[in-house]
Amino acid sequence: MPSPRMTMPTREVLRALLGAPERERYGLELCGLAGMPSGTVYPILARLEQAGWVESRWEDPETHVAEGRPRRRYYRITTDGAQQAREAIARAYRSRRQPVPGWLAGAGGVP
Image 1 (cartoon, rainbow, N blue to C red):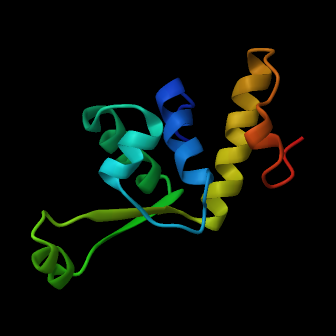
Image 2 (image 1 turned 90 degrees about the horizontal axis):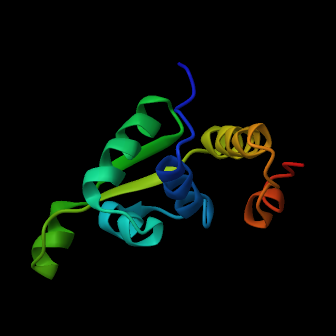
């Protein structure tokens, strides 16, 4: 499957996921971290999941019922997805002749 386009919103969602790649985050949490509305973030998450970079799961019903809130869907970047994302973001910056950001260069050995 081809890599997702590295638009600015896609890079922001990936930055939020790469900030703690081992951690699951729910959709609205990612919206806040990326600074974008759900109508922008959720389609990006769907494309990243379709590309195999992200995996998701619904939380157990007992949890949200006990807490009295809607059910959350949790997202986590895969190991391969993290590496591919770092490389794709670095290529996007280089193609624009911009320096690769420090948060990316220090994660996973992207030069």
